[in-house]
Length: 259
Image 1 (cartoon, rainbow, N blue to C red):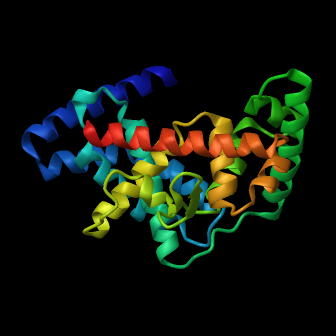
Image 2 (cartoon, rainbow, N blue to C red):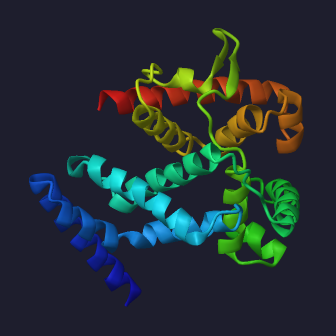
């Protein structure tokens, strides 16, 4: 039954998106927003657990991201609208929290769970000789898969992605995450926000271990030695992952720009 409802929602959304791209009707856009408010609601609930904002405020801000996604969605590229819209919704909420100077807090229980989960992850990696799945870590922690994923999301987003986050490239010297964008010369808030979302989308396309390294080094401000210790790998491997990650980010963002 749930599968049928989801399929019907997707079909209705696609029909309305086609209609909106042909007519640019505000009424059609409003119908799309109402139809997909569940996406905003899900993100708002996730951020409610780790911020001091009200649910209504997060819903209003997230809805702006949903509208932006509706405006920019390209049917020809074959994306699922929900997958396309979530980074816009999440990015709008993140930008709002950062601009308000609101520090994202993580409940103490979640901080403890993340620390325990990280240790379990390293142990399982050794035992299984492969990266453990989220459900395996959640089972060891005796919590639901959904809660473990929320814990990881909260910790990851504790450091909101900033285009000014410092990075270092052995060949090009010091730079910032904004420098991996094809055109870092922002002319307006709109462009800066879109680039921030593109950067987040690109980060999530990286292989998990490479993304972990980039987040520890650039967002958590750990040294390569500290990152190596956290992940149970060598400093040489961290350095190699950093270089590979930056190269891959430039490639992803460059190809996105061309399309």
